[in-house]
Image (cartoon, rainbow, N blue to C red; front, side, top):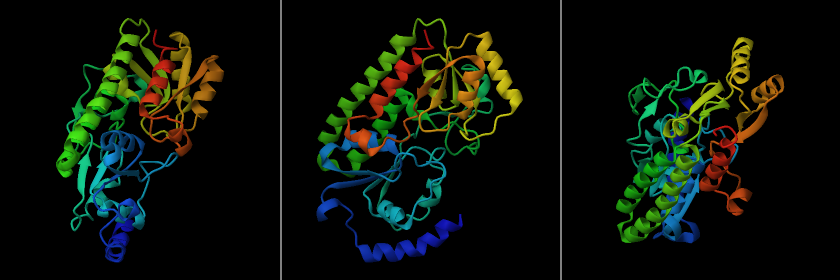
Length: 316
């Protein structure tokens, strides 16, 4: 990637000019954590609490996949105590960034470490829970890997625990506070998981239709089947034949709701809803939350509860 080659020498000059402190108000004791996008920010913020400064590189509406860090972003990562990202499958630009950090003391956390990823070669036909082959990071199969692991509350809990363990080792002075914060947040994630289990355990209809295949991990966790109009790439073109096929599926299975992602284009879902006389619903992949919504108290848990209520329209 030519951009990174151009950034590296600039960043070296930038860091030399800026010095070593990147914490707010000139303090050096406070832990400085840079995260990539909202779920990583929110998970880390709940762990760190008042013992540090947590920031996110990407704001609401920014595409996590196609994002390219600016020289200022690169400097912020290099100067931070900790850098947290979800996975190379979600933040595809991170491996190139990590190559530039050889002279930095930043501790890098891959929050999805240990979580099995799966390939989604044909998401629109639903998910076969028994026959899918799972993959792990580094196996070379990243062209069709679903990166949305944080939408599974159990995996979200695992990511929180992974982030917390490393932060405790980096800032052992505040280890007890991090452990207490983590325990409190994990309890909320476990309650969220229990709510999903209770809501869907006795459901007869376990199929839901979405425009974008982002909810496969959630579907697997609760023995549901996600049928998607387009696959993992939300802007993927869908042929008239495929639209007709999904339309027939909707009619034959009495599907009542077609879900679209709140942050994405909903043209395909709207078209099919009109053709099949089906309602539209919203599911969020929780990739970004606006500043005003965050200030109003909306967070990962809020949105996941909203997703649960939305799915209850179909899973019953």
